[in-house]
Amino acid sequence: MPASPIRRLVPFAEEAQRRGVRIHHLNIGQPDIESPDTFWNAILEARPRVVAYSHSAGNPSLRKKAAESYSAIGIPIEPDQLLVTTAGSEAIRFAFLTSLNPGDEVIIPEPLYANYLGFAVEAGIRVRPIATRIEDDFALPDVEAFEEAIGPRTRAILLCNPSNPTGTVFTADQLDRLRDVVLRHDLFLIADEVYRDFNYTGRPIRSVLQLDGLERHAVMVDSVSKRFSLCGARIGFLASRNPEILSAALKLAQARLSPPTVEQIGVEGALDTAPDYFDKVRAEYQARRDLLVERLRAMPGVLCPRIDGAFYAMVRLPIDDADSFCRWLLESFRLEGQTVMLAPGTGFYATPGGGKDEVRIAYVLRREDLSAAMDCLERALREYPGRRG
Image (cartoon, rainbow, N blue to C red; front, side, top):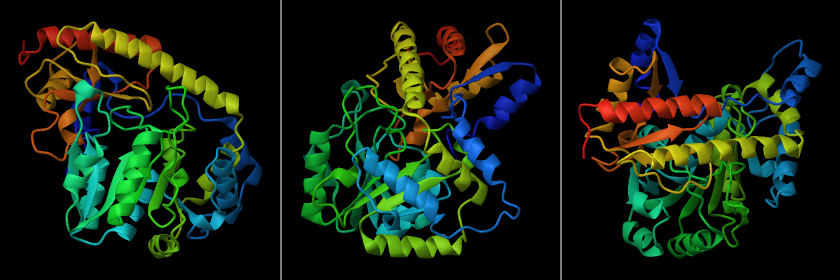
């Protein structure tokens, strides 16, 4: 199993905190926006006397409410075409385990969400990466690149849209072309759509479930962690119109008994949250994005691409080694008693050597704290012994 680039530096951060250092955490996508009252009100109103197991596929009432919420945004799905999972992480595991056999391959554009690599190890499958370039704003590669990557053991393509870690949003035309590849080679198209609401393009994001002809090929992964700032609630969804995928996933769901009961009650209430909640959240993150991009592009030697969605930036720094730099920030660097914690880019690549001079930044802090974190990064880049010209 690969170590998480997001969490493996935690012991160094804990030691710095013990020494009184204030750390600006830009390493992990933990939103600081308050969770909606609708979540807590639903739990307080229910107050179950016994916290019992739920249905293995999730509470029927939550599945019905979730299906209605998807249909309301133009993603028609029936309650029996989705499962409630223990967060999006389990939904990705289920997607891998139901659509690929051990030894099969899944194609994923890189840089990619680091935990995909761990989930692939668990499932006994191989990740075949397709390179994207920071100079091209990590745009989705041409169809030819996918065609060249397809081999005899390829069974699926996985996209994260909007992308973690790059913030790239894939267009409807790009998805249509990829759909044609999927149909031509009879593959599954798995889409991680957790960041759908964090979209700054002004254009709607097309879901994989909205692509014509993929009824048996499309698998959607979703979560309430980011949308409602409920990372610790651990509730996600796996949706597909392929009954064989759903039947196999239900067996996996039965093996782990059920998703969290109390949190399901809260999420059912959260799905009634007024739209203006998301309008305010989106506006706040877009303002943070704008601040981050302005500060990064003013730093000599830093390359910051365009960021259209999610709340991450994959950035190239003038450094010799991202892992060493991120550890040095925690062990050796201080600016007025503060430092910044970043995620080394190497962990977001399946290709050896990828991301060696890149870091992922999660802009999940208030703007004043984000600005202070950028002050730390700007000074650190001047003082780092391994700085490159």
